[in-house]
Amino acid sequence: MNFNLRQLEAQETPFYYYDTQLLRTTLAALDAARAGEEHIHVHYAVKANARPELLRIILAAGLGADCVSGGEVRAALEAGFPAESIVFAGVGKADWELRLALEAGIGMFNVESLPELQRISELAVEMGKMARIALRINPNVDAHTHEKITTGLNENKFGLAMEDMLEAVREAERLEGVSYEGLHFHIGSSILDLGVFARLCERINELQDVLEKEGIVTRNINVGGGLGTHYEDPDVHPIPDFIGYMDTFRKYLNLRPGQHLHVEPGRSVVAQCGMLVSRVLYEKQGHEKKFLILDAGFTDLIRPALYNAHHLIQNLSSADQTATERYDVVGPICESSDVFQTQAPLPPSKRGDLIAFRTAGAYGEVMASQYNLRRLPGAVFDEQQN
Ligand SMILES: *Cc1c(COP(=O)(O)O)cnc(C)c1O
Image (cartoon, rainbow, N blue to C red; front, side):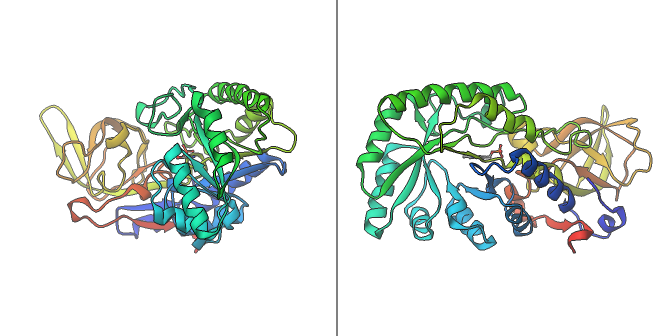
C-alpha cells in the first residue's frame, strides 16, 4: 500500500485511507484470473465497502454487484451497475426491498427459504414481473473459520438444507412470477484454505447429479464469496491468490455445457487497499502495562471487538519501526470491549503519532457507528484519485 505521510498528517483523525491504485491493481489481478472466460461472472459484495468512489472503480473493472439489502441494491444502481449484473441475497428481504429489486429487474434473487420464495412470487405476480431466482443451499462444508462467520453448515439461519433442495426447486418451477435459474452457495468468510472450495465443488457436483436425474436444468452456479485476505502481513500479500481461487473451480467444479459460474468476493477485493488512521491521544503508564489511548474506537473499526479480529497496527509517524515496546492499544469509548489489541508490539509511541490499522478496507468503514454520539470517520484517497 502506498501513501504520503505528509498528506495523512494534514488530515483530521480518525479517517479511512484508501489506496485506489492498489484497488486497481487488485482488480486487474482478478480480471487476469478470470482469463476472459465469458461464462465466469464476478459480483462484488457491496457490504464489504459501499464507498461510491470505490464502487465506481469496481464497476469500471467490469464486476457486477452482490447486495444483501435494498439500500445496497439502490447504492449499486446509483453507482451505475447494470440491473442485470446485480444479485440480491439475504435471509430477511422485506417487501419494499423485494419491490425495489423487482422494479429494477435485477439479475438474480438468491432465495434463502420457502416462505421467501412464496413472497417473491406473490409480489412479482402483483407487479407483472418475472423474478429470476437461485436457491441458496447449505452444502454442509465446514469452512473452518470463525464461528460467527461460518455459514455453510446444515442448521443455520442462512439458506436451505440439502435435503430440501429438490422440493424447493420443484416449488420454484411451480410458482408463478419466478423462474428457477440456479443454485447459490456461500460457506463462510475469510477462507484462505483453497481445499475448502475444492470440497464445496465436489458437493455441488453431487447436488447437480441429483437435479439432472430429475431432468432439472440449472443454468447458474453461484459459489459465493469467502476468499480470505492476509491480515497478519499485508505488505507480503497485498494481492489475493485469485488465480488459485479460480483454478480451484476450474479443476474441481464440473460445470455443465452452457452453465455460468458466479463468484462474489467482497473482502478480498477491497481489504488491503484501506487502512484506518488514528492519532495517539495519551500514553498511559499503568502498573503492569502501558496503554496507548487512541482517538479511534470500535465505532470506527468494530472487527476486533466483534470477531476478535486482528489488524496489523503500525505507528506511521515513527522513523524507526523496531518494535521495542508493548502496548494495550485502546479506544476512547465507554465500553471495556473497546480494545484493539493487548500487548501490541510497537515502536515507542507518543501523543500525536499516527497509528494505522492495516487491511481495513473491508468491513471497516461500512460498520462504523455513532455510538457515544461520535463523529463518523472521514475518508481520504491516494493522490492519483484527486
Ligand atoms: C458477505 C457475502 C459475500 C462476500 O463475502 P466475503 O467474505 O466478503 O468475500 C458473498 N456472498 C454473500 C451471499 C455474502 O453474504
